[in-house]
Length: 259
Ligand code: KIV
Ligand code: NA
Image (cartoon, rainbow, N blue to C red; front, top):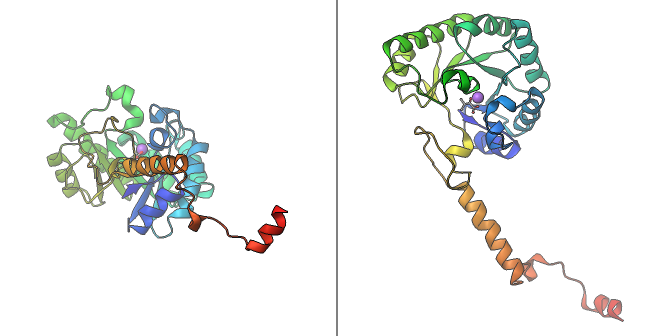
């Protein structure tokens, strides 16, 4: 699984054979330049989902319910999930939380919308968690994590994202669940993995903070910058556009025009 936030990023994920594409609310930062995910609106998520849905033709598309669109009640959660499907054109939604979100997950799945759960480090709750911290490092918090994972499974989630969890804990939780786990910063014992596309493809300027779990598989930003700089140079020295980029005109026509 990989994130996408627009038509081109969805297209490349789909063409490279991703099983699932996630329109994560991380797009608040990577596509909209916000400081964190708390600012992004459901209308903005829907707009990005619509573009992703046009680019991802084979992958199963999951869209994040943004903060504020599902915590008030199960009815609010279902209403938001329906908007994501009808307006955003996603196949499923993801929401953050364990035991406390079980009722909402049950309500949404009963309406026929698949739910991907998300436990461990839940970035929408960063202020309550005291920042971006590894979750489940003590026996007690690992047990709470397992309880959360079992609760979302029983509520009907088709899979659960485990974020920033010690590998041993994620592996054991994966063994104890019937549904697949999708890890991000949770080791290789999960059923699957997810990463933020701009992070793994290196599509960000130098100096950006990257969590320990991200592997940079490419240098998309470096390549884009190289291309833009080459364009600038060739425009200034007039080597671009070259004759092959230029429309010809019959000589006699031009002679007449010149007269
Ligand atoms: O918003 C996001 O991109 C996510 C994942 C990386 C799991 O929630
Ligand atoms: Na997210």
